Length: 111
Image 1 (cartoon, rainbow, N blue to C red):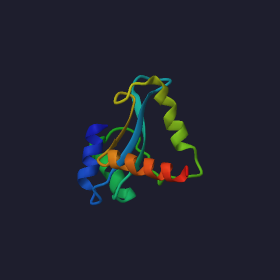
Image 2: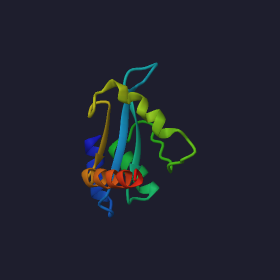
Image 3: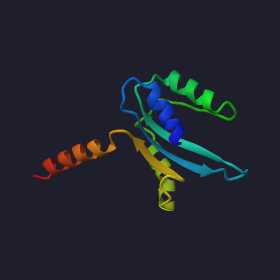
């Protein structure tokens, strides 16, 4: 997933790519599959083309994020395994400054 993140970041013009992912084991066959939520300056078709180039075999389903679905909740179910970097992770190049900004907003709202 780190390699995928680096490819996405190097292809993006925004310089602010973020990715939250989980890796799950197939329930009826051997192997794994991934779910991810991505914020990137790339267009949807560019993300799909990059994924197909990196992983030409398998099913690749790329969709625009829909706030009406519980995608983040579904992805988070793997986090209880507590294996950051192996089964789930958050990748981004501005995560520390984003966290500081979120804390400032949260602190300001608790006046």
